[in-house]
Length: 455
Image 1 (cartoon, rainbow, N blue to C red):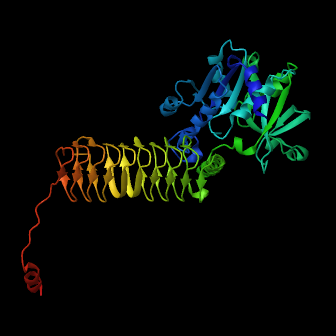
Image 2 (cartoon, helix red, strand yellow):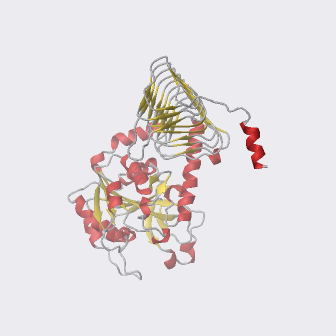
Protein backbone atom coordinates (compact mmCIF):
# COMPACT_ATOMS: atom_id res chain seq x y z
CA UNK A 1 0.00 0.00 0.00
CA UNK A 2 1.45 3.37 -1.01
CA UNK A 3 1.65 6.26 1.45
CA UNK A 4 -0.82 8.23 -0.70
CA UNK A 5 -3.39 5.43 -0.69
CA UNK A 6 -3.01 5.06 3.07
CA UNK A 7 -3.66 8.78 3.62
CA UNK A 8 -6.77 8.63 1.43
CA UNK A 9 -7.99 5.58 3.33
CA UNK A 10 -7.49 7.31 6.67
CA UNK A 11 -9.49 10.35 5.51
CA UNK A 12 -12.43 8.18 4.48
CA UNK A 13 -12.61 6.18 7.73
CA UNK A 14 -14.17 8.00 10.65
CA UNK A 15 -13.06 7.15 14.19
CA UNK A 16 -16.72 7.32 15.21
CA UNK A 17 -17.40 4.31 12.97
CA UNK A 18 -14.95 2.02 14.82
CA UNK A 19 -14.75 0.56 18.31
CA UNK A 20 -12.20 -2.04 19.36
CA UNK A 21 -12.58 -4.92 21.81
CA UNK A 22 -9.38 -6.53 23.09
CA UNK A 23 -9.74 -9.96 24.67
CA UNK A 24 -7.27 -10.26 27.56
CA UNK A 25 -8.90 -12.31 30.31
CA UNK A 26 -6.66 -15.38 30.08
CA UNK A 27 -4.33 -16.13 32.99
CA UNK A 28 -1.90 -17.98 30.75
CA UNK A 29 -1.39 -21.01 32.98
CA UNK A 30 1.28 -22.36 30.63
CA UNK A 31 3.39 -19.32 31.49
CA UNK A 32 3.69 -20.74 35.03
CA UNK A 33 3.24 -17.28 36.49
CA UNK A 34 0.96 -15.40 38.90
CA UNK A 35 1.18 -12.44 36.50
CA UNK A 36 -1.66 -12.24 33.92
CA UNK A 37 -0.35 -13.44 30.58
CA UNK A 38 -0.82 -10.13 28.77
CA UNK A 39 1.14 -8.29 31.47
CA UNK A 40 4.36 -10.10 30.63
CA UNK A 41 6.78 -7.65 29.00
CA UNK A 42 7.98 -7.62 25.42
CA UNK A 43 10.83 -5.12 24.97
CA UNK A 44 10.05 -3.69 28.44
CA UNK A 45 6.38 -3.04 27.64
CA UNK A 46 3.47 -5.33 28.61
CA UNK A 47 1.98 -7.32 25.75
CA UNK A 48 -1.40 -5.66 26.22
CA UNK A 49 0.08 -2.17 25.87
CA UNK A 50 1.67 -3.09 22.54
CA UNK A 51 -1.80 -4.04 21.29
CA UNK A 52 -3.48 -0.96 22.76
CA UNK A 53 -0.87 1.40 21.30
CA UNK A 54 -1.35 -0.15 17.86
CA UNK A 55 -5.14 -0.05 18.16
CA UNK A 56 -5.01 3.60 19.20
CA UNK A 57 -3.39 4.48 15.87
CA UNK A 58 -6.77 3.77 14.25
CA UNK A 59 -8.29 6.47 16.49
CA UNK A 60 -11.35 4.40 17.44
CA UNK A 61 -14.31 5.82 19.31
CA UNK A 62 -13.73 3.40 22.15
CA UNK A 63 -11.27 0.69 23.22
CA UNK A 64 -12.71 -1.95 25.55
CA UNK A 65 -10.46 -4.50 27.25
CA UNK A 66 -11.98 -7.75 28.53
CA UNK A 67 -10.12 -8.81 31.69
CA UNK A 68 -10.48 -11.63 34.15
CA UNK A 69 -11.47 -11.27 37.80
CA UNK A 70 -8.81 -10.15 40.28
CA UNK A 71 -6.57 -8.47 37.71
CA UNK A 72 -6.06 -4.97 39.18
CA UNK A 73 -2.60 -4.59 37.64
CA UNK A 74 -4.03 -5.24 34.19
CA UNK A 75 -6.90 -2.82 34.75
CA UNK A 76 -4.41 -0.13 35.76
CA UNK A 77 -2.17 -0.87 32.78
CA UNK A 78 -4.94 -0.24 30.24
CA UNK A 79 -6.28 2.98 31.76
CA UNK A 80 -7.99 5.21 30.70
CA UNK A 81 -9.67 2.63 28.46
CA UNK A 82 -12.81 0.80 29.53
CA UNK A 83 -12.47 -2.63 31.13
CA UNK A 84 -15.12 -5.32 31.56
CA UNK A 85 -14.72 -8.51 33.55
CA UNK A 86 -15.21 -11.99 32.13
CA UNK A 87 -16.00 -13.76 35.40
CA UNK A 88 -16.17 -17.26 33.91
CA UNK A 89 -13.73 -17.93 31.10
CA UNK A 90 -16.11 -19.71 28.73
CA UNK A 91 -14.46 -18.96 25.41
CA UNK A 92 -13.99 -16.07 23.01
CA UNK A 93 -17.68 -15.77 22.25
CA UNK A 94 -18.44 -15.38 25.94
CA UNK A 95 -15.72 -12.72 26.25
CA UNK A 96 -17.27 -10.83 23.34
CA UNK A 97 -20.69 -10.96 25.01
CA UNK A 98 -19.27 -9.41 28.20
CA UNK A 99 -17.98 -6.42 26.23
CA UNK A 100 -21.12 -5.69 24.21
CA UNK A 101 -23.08 -3.84 26.93
CA UNK A 102 -20.35 -1.19 26.79
CA UNK A 103 -21.20 -0.73 23.09
CA UNK A 104 -24.94 -0.33 23.52
CA UNK A 105 -26.46 1.55 20.55
CA UNK A 106 -23.13 1.55 18.65
CA UNK A 107 -23.80 0.88 14.95
CA UNK A 108 -20.34 1.16 13.44
CA UNK A 109 -17.63 -1.50 13.04
CA UNK A 110 -16.52 -3.58 16.01
CA UNK A 111 -12.95 -4.85 15.70
CA UNK A 112 -11.90 -7.78 17.89
CA UNK A 113 -8.21 -8.14 18.84
CA UNK A 114 -6.25 -10.26 21.30
CA UNK A 115 -4.04 -8.96 24.09
CA UNK A 116 -1.41 -11.63 23.48
CA UNK A 117 -0.66 -10.79 19.81
CA UNK A 118 1.64 -7.79 20.29
CA UNK A 119 3.26 -7.75 16.84
CA UNK A 120 0.12 -6.82 14.91
CA UNK A 121 0.69 -3.67 12.87
CA UNK A 122 -1.59 -0.66 12.37
CA UNK A 123 -1.53 -0.82 8.54
CA UNK A 124 -2.83 -4.39 8.74
CA UNK A 125 -5.69 -3.37 11.02
CA UNK A 126 -6.50 -0.41 8.78
CA UNK A 127 -6.62 -2.73 5.79
CA UNK A 128 -8.94 -5.07 7.70
CA UNK A 129 -11.24 -2.16 8.51
CA UNK A 130 -11.13 -0.88 4.94
CA UNK A 131 -12.16 -4.28 3.53
CA UNK A 132 -15.00 -4.43 6.01
CA UNK A 133 -16.35 -1.11 4.71
CA UNK A 134 -16.38 -2.29 1.08
CA UNK A 135 -19.52 -2.07 -1.04
CA UNK A 136 -20.41 -5.76 -0.64
CA UNK A 137 -21.09 -4.93 3.04
CA UNK A 138 -19.75 -8.03 4.84
CA UNK A 139 -21.21 -8.92 8.21
CA UNK A 140 -17.81 -10.18 9.33
CA UNK A 141 -14.32 -9.66 7.95
CA UNK A 142 -11.69 -12.17 9.07
CA UNK A 143 -7.94 -11.67 9.14
CA UNK A 144 -6.23 -14.74 7.72
CA UNK A 145 -2.61 -15.87 7.52
CA UNK A 146 -0.54 -18.69 6.06
CA UNK A 147 1.74 -20.19 8.73
CA UNK A 148 4.74 -22.40 7.91
CA UNK A 149 2.86 -25.29 9.53
CA UNK A 150 -0.94 -24.92 9.59
CA UNK A 151 -1.49 -27.85 11.95
CA UNK A 152 -3.69 -26.86 14.87
CA UNK A 153 -5.16 -23.75 13.26
CA UNK A 154 -8.72 -23.33 12.06
CA UNK A 155 -8.83 -23.35 8.23
CA UNK A 156 -10.52 -20.61 6.23
CA UNK A 157 -12.37 -22.34 3.40
CA UNK A 158 -13.17 -19.80 0.70
CA UNK A 159 -16.26 -19.84 -1.47
CA UNK A 160 -14.92 -17.59 -4.21
CA UNK A 161 -12.43 -14.75 -4.32
CA UNK A 162 -12.05 -13.45 -0.77
CA UNK A 163 -15.49 -14.59 0.43
CA UNK A 164 -15.54 -17.16 3.22
CA UNK A 165 -17.56 -20.35 2.99
CA UNK A 166 -16.76 -21.71 6.46
CA UNK A 167 -14.17 -22.02 9.22
CA UNK A 168 -13.11 -25.60 9.92
CA UNK A 169 -11.17 -26.47 13.06
CA UNK A 170 -8.22 -28.85 12.78
CA UNK A 171 -9.97 -31.68 14.62
CA UNK A 172 -12.99 -31.47 12.30
CA UNK A 173 -11.12 -31.08 8.99
CA UNK A 174 -11.22 -33.80 6.33
CA UNK A 175 -8.16 -34.46 4.15
CA UNK A 176 -8.94 -31.78 1.56
CA UNK A 177 -9.79 -29.18 4.22
CA UNK A 178 -6.64 -29.98 6.19
CA UNK A 179 -4.63 -29.35 3.02
CA UNK A 180 -5.78 -25.71 3.01
CA UNK A 181 -3.01 -23.44 4.30
CA UNK A 182 -5.06 -20.27 4.82
CA UNK A 183 -5.72 -20.12 8.57
CA UNK A 184 -7.79 -18.09 10.99
CA UNK A 185 -5.99 -15.54 13.18
CA UNK A 186 -9.03 -14.84 15.37
CA UNK A 187 -8.98 -11.12 14.53
CA UNK A 188 -12.23 -9.77 13.11
CA UNK A 189 -14.26 -6.79 12.08
CA UNK A 190 -17.98 -7.22 12.78
CA UNK A 191 -20.97 -5.14 11.75
CA UNK A 192 -22.09 -3.25 14.84
CA UNK A 193 -25.71 -3.20 13.65
CA UNK A 194 -25.97 -6.96 13.90
CA UNK A 195 -23.37 -7.94 16.46
CA UNK A 196 -25.70 -7.88 19.46
CA UNK A 197 -28.20 -10.29 17.85
CA UNK A 198 -25.54 -12.55 16.34
CA UNK A 199 -23.53 -12.81 19.56
CA UNK A 200 -26.67 -13.78 21.46
CA UNK A 201 -27.06 -16.77 19.12
CA UNK A 202 -23.59 -18.20 19.83
CA UNK A 203 -24.07 -21.47 21.71
CA UNK A 204 -21.76 -23.80 23.61
CA UNK A 205 -22.88 -26.95 21.83
CA UNK A 206 -19.39 -28.33 21.37
CA UNK A 207 -17.04 -30.71 23.11
CA UNK A 208 -15.46 -27.94 25.18
CA UNK A 209 -18.83 -26.46 26.20
CA UNK A 210 -17.51 -22.99 25.35
CA UNK A 211 -18.74 -20.08 23.22
CA UNK A 212 -16.66 -19.25 20.13
CA UNK A 213 -16.52 -16.15 17.94
CA UNK A 214 -15.80 -18.47 15.02
CA UNK A 215 -19.54 -19.29 14.96
CA UNK A 216 -20.40 -15.75 13.85
CA UNK A 217 -19.90 -16.22 10.07
CA UNK A 218 -22.38 -19.10 9.99
CA UNK A 219 -24.86 -17.22 12.18
CA UNK A 220 -24.64 -14.12 9.97
CA UNK A 221 -25.01 -16.28 6.85
CA UNK A 222 -28.51 -17.24 8.02
CA UNK A 223 -29.32 -13.55 7.63
CA UNK A 224 -27.88 -13.77 4.10
CA UNK A 225 -24.82 -11.76 5.10
CA UNK A 226 -21.39 -12.67 3.78
CA UNK A 227 -17.98 -12.93 5.49
CA UNK A 228 -14.84 -11.57 3.79
CA UNK A 229 -11.21 -12.51 4.33
CA UNK A 230 -7.95 -10.58 4.01
CA UNK A 231 -4.39 -11.85 4.48
CA UNK A 232 -1.52 -10.70 6.69
CA UNK A 233 2.02 -11.82 7.47
CA UNK A 234 2.20 -14.81 9.77
CA UNK A 235 4.62 -13.20 12.23
CA UNK A 236 2.25 -10.30 12.92
CA UNK A 237 -0.30 -12.58 14.56
CA UNK A 238 1.95 -14.85 16.57
CA UNK A 239 0.47 -15.25 20.03
CA UNK A 240 2.02 -15.94 23.41
CA UNK A 241 1.09 -18.96 25.50
CA UNK A 242 4.49 -20.02 26.87
CA UNK A 243 7.76 -18.44 27.92
CA UNK A 244 9.40 -19.97 24.85
CA UNK A 245 6.89 -18.23 22.59
CA UNK A 246 7.48 -14.96 24.43
CA UNK A 247 11.21 -15.33 23.77
CA UNK A 248 10.49 -16.03 20.10
CA UNK A 249 8.46 -12.82 19.81
CA UNK A 250 11.21 -10.90 21.60
CA UNK A 251 13.68 -12.09 18.96
CA UNK A 252 11.35 -11.06 16.14
CA UNK A 253 10.73 -7.66 17.72
CA UNK A 254 14.43 -7.01 18.31
CA UNK A 255 15.38 -7.99 14.76
CA UNK A 256 12.76 -5.63 13.36
CA UNK A 257 13.94 -2.83 15.66
CA UNK A 258 17.58 -3.36 14.67
CA UNK A 259 16.72 -3.29 10.98
CA UNK A 260 14.64 -0.14 11.41
CA UNK A 261 17.41 1.73 13.21
CA UNK A 262 20.07 0.72 10.67
CA UNK A 263 17.83 1.87 7.83
CA UNK A 264 17.62 5.24 9.59
CA UNK A 265 21.38 5.68 9.81
CA UNK A 266 22.44 3.93 13.01
CA UNK A 267 25.63 1.85 12.88
CA UNK A 268 25.71 -1.44 14.80
CA UNK A 269 28.86 -3.52 14.63
CA UNK A 270 27.10 -6.67 15.87
CA UNK A 271 23.32 -6.02 15.74
CA UNK A 272 22.34 -9.36 17.23
CA UNK A 273 23.93 -8.39 20.57
CA UNK A 274 22.16 -5.03 20.94
CA UNK A 275 18.78 -4.97 22.70
CA UNK A 276 16.20 -2.19 22.59
CA UNK A 277 13.06 -1.27 24.49
CA UNK A 278 9.82 -0.63 22.64
CA UNK A 279 10.20 3.13 23.15
CA UNK A 280 13.93 3.51 22.41
CA UNK A 281 14.71 6.55 20.25
CA UNK A 282 18.01 6.79 18.37
CA UNK A 283 19.00 9.49 15.88
CA UNK A 284 21.18 9.04 12.80
CA UNK A 285 24.98 8.78 12.88
CA UNK A 286 24.96 6.99 16.22
CA UNK A 287 27.42 4.11 16.55
CA UNK A 288 26.57 1.23 18.88
CA UNK A 289 29.22 -1.33 19.70
CA UNK A 290 28.43 -4.96 20.65
CA UNK A 291 26.56 -6.03 23.80
CA UNK A 292 24.71 -2.82 24.54
CA UNK A 293 21.37 -2.92 26.40
CA UNK A 294 18.71 -0.21 26.27
CA UNK A 295 16.00 -0.22 28.92
CA UNK A 296 12.80 1.79 28.76
CA UNK A 297 12.80 5.54 28.27
CA UNK A 298 16.04 6.12 26.35
CA UNK A 299 16.63 8.80 23.71
CA UNK A 300 20.01 9.02 21.97
CA UNK A 301 20.80 12.10 19.88
CA UNK A 302 22.83 12.39 16.70
CA UNK A 303 26.51 11.53 16.59
CA UNK A 304 26.77 9.60 19.85
CA UNK A 305 29.10 6.64 20.33
CA UNK A 306 27.86 3.91 22.68
CA UNK A 307 30.71 1.58 23.43
CA UNK A 308 30.54 -2.12 24.24
CA UNK A 309 28.86 -3.64 27.30
CA UNK A 310 27.01 -0.48 28.32
CA UNK A 311 23.58 -0.50 29.98
CA UNK A 312 21.32 2.55 29.54
CA UNK A 313 17.79 3.10 30.83
CA UNK A 314 15.58 6.12 31.45
CA UNK A 315 18.12 8.57 30.05
CA UNK A 316 18.26 11.40 27.55
CA UNK A 317 21.62 11.62 25.77
CA UNK A 318 22.46 14.81 23.82
CA UNK A 319 24.54 15.03 20.63
CA UNK A 320 28.09 13.71 20.24
CA UNK A 321 28.27 12.01 23.64
CA UNK A 322 30.57 9.05 24.18
CA UNK A 323 29.45 6.38 26.64
CA UNK A 324 31.34 3.33 27.84
CA UNK A 325 32.63 0.74 27.56
CA UNK A 326 31.06 -0.92 30.59
CA UNK A 327 29.06 2.15 31.60
CA UNK A 328 25.73 2.09 33.40
CA UNK A 329 23.33 5.00 32.92
CA UNK A 330 20.34 4.73 35.24
CA UNK A 331 16.90 6.40 35.08
CA UNK A 332 16.29 10.16 35.26
CA UNK A 333 19.67 11.02 33.80
CA UNK A 334 20.41 13.73 31.24
CA UNK A 335 23.81 13.93 29.58
CA UNK A 336 24.76 17.11 27.71
CA UNK A 337 26.47 17.57 24.36
CA UNK A 338 30.04 16.35 23.90
CA UNK A 339 30.18 14.81 27.37
CA UNK A 340 32.22 11.66 27.95
CA UNK A 341 31.11 8.87 30.26
CA UNK A 342 33.82 6.23 30.45
CA UNK A 343 34.42 2.67 31.56
CA UNK A 344 32.91 1.43 34.82
CA UNK A 345 31.05 4.68 35.45
CA UNK A 346 27.56 4.61 36.95
CA UNK A 347 25.25 7.63 36.76
CA UNK A 348 21.86 7.83 38.41
CA UNK A 349 19.24 10.61 38.48
CA UNK A 350 21.74 13.26 37.47
CA UNK A 351 22.21 16.02 34.95
CA UNK A 352 25.65 16.13 33.33
CA UNK A 353 26.58 19.37 31.60
CA UNK A 354 27.99 19.99 28.14
CA UNK A 355 31.57 18.85 27.66
CA UNK A 356 31.94 17.31 31.11
CA UNK A 357 34.05 14.17 31.51
CA UNK A 358 33.60 11.25 33.89
CA UNK A 359 36.08 8.96 32.29
CA UNK A 360 36.47 5.97 34.60
CA UNK A 361 35.61 4.17 37.82
CA UNK A 362 33.12 6.64 39.29
CA UNK A 363 29.64 6.91 40.74
CA UNK A 364 27.52 10.03 40.27
CA UNK A 365 24.04 10.04 41.80
CA UNK A 366 21.48 12.77 42.49
CA UNK A 367 23.83 15.36 41.05
CA UNK A 368 23.53 18.59 39.08
CA UNK A 369 26.81 18.89 37.19
CA UNK A 370 27.68 21.93 35.09
CA UNK A 371 29.65 22.11 31.87
CA UNK A 372 33.33 21.28 31.37
CA UNK A 373 33.67 19.43 34.67
CA UNK A 374 36.42 16.85 35.01
CA UNK A 375 35.35 14.17 37.48
CA UNK A 376 38.40 12.11 38.37
CA UNK A 377 38.98 8.38 38.59
CA UNK A 378 37.45 6.73 41.64
CA UNK A 379 35.36 9.75 42.60
CA UNK A 380 31.88 9.35 44.04
CA UNK A 381 28.96 11.45 45.18
CA UNK A 382 27.75 9.96 48.45
CA UNK A 383 24.06 10.74 48.05
CA UNK A 384 22.46 8.45 50.67
CA UNK A 385 22.88 8.70 54.43
CA UNK A 386 20.81 5.64 55.29
CA UNK A 387 17.66 7.70 55.71
CA UNK A 388 17.33 10.06 52.76
CA UNK A 389 18.99 10.95 49.48
CA UNK A 390 20.46 14.40 49.01
CA UNK A 391 21.75 16.36 46.06
CA UNK A 392 25.24 17.35 45.03
CA UNK A 393 25.81 20.48 42.92
CA UNK A 394 28.98 20.80 40.87
CA UNK A 395 29.22 24.04 38.92
CA UNK A 396 31.00 24.79 35.62
CA UNK A 397 34.70 24.10 35.18
CA UNK A 398 35.23 22.17 38.41
CA UNK A 399 38.08 19.66 38.71
CA UNK A 400 37.37 16.69 40.99
CA UNK A 401 40.57 14.84 41.88
CA UNK A 402 40.94 11.08 41.94
CA UNK A 403 39.28 9.14 44.77
CA UNK A 404 37.42 12.18 46.07
CA UNK A 405 34.15 11.66 47.93
CA UNK A 406 31.52 14.40 47.88
CA UNK A 407 29.07 13.86 50.74
CA UNK A 408 25.65 15.29 49.90
CA UNK A 409 24.15 17.75 50.36
CA UNK A 410 27.13 19.72 49.13
CA UNK A 411 27.99 22.37 46.56
CA UNK A 412 31.22 22.88 44.61
CA UNK A 413 31.28 26.33 43.03
CA UNK A 414 32.70 27.34 39.66
CA UNK A 415 36.30 26.58 38.72
CA UNK A 416 37.07 25.03 42.10
CA UNK A 417 39.52 22.14 42.52
CA UNK A 418 39.04 19.19 44.83
CA UNK A 419 42.29 17.58 45.90
CA UNK A 420 42.69 13.87 45.26
CA UNK A 421 41.60 11.64 48.12
CA UNK A 422 39.51 14.33 49.80
CA UNK A 423 36.23 13.74 51.59
CA UNK A 424 34.21 16.92 51.09
CA UNK A 425 31.33 17.69 53.45
CA UNK A 426 31.03 21.48 53.10
CA UNK A 427 30.69 23.98 50.28
CA UNK A 428 33.86 24.72 48.29
CA UNK A 429 34.01 28.31 47.04
CA UNK A 430 34.64 29.52 43.52
CA UNK A 431 38.26 29.14 42.36
CA UNK A 432 39.23 27.50 45.67
CA UNK A 433 41.17 24.31 46.31
CA UNK A 434 39.19 22.02 48.58
CA UNK A 435 41.33 19.66 50.68
CA UNK A 436 39.94 17.30 53.31
CA UNK A 437 42.53 14.67 54.22
CA UNK A 438 45.08 14.03 56.99
CA UNK A 439 48.56 15.49 56.55
CA UNK A 440 51.17 12.97 55.50
CA UNK A 441 53.72 12.02 58.12
CA UNK A 442 56.71 9.72 58.13
CA UNK A 443 58.40 7.55 60.78
CA UNK A 444 62.02 6.91 59.86
CA UNK A 445 63.07 3.25 59.97
CA UNK A 446 59.65 2.00 61.03
CA UNK A 447 59.35 -0.51 58.18
CA UNK A 448 62.74 -2.10 58.86
CA UNK A 449 62.00 -2.55 62.56
CA UNK A 450 58.52 -3.87 61.82
CA UNK A 451 59.81 -6.49 59.41
CA UNK A 452 62.49 -7.62 61.85
CA UNK A 453 59.84 -8.22 64.51
CA UNK A 454 57.84 -10.37 62.07
CA UNK A 455 60.89 -12.52 61.33
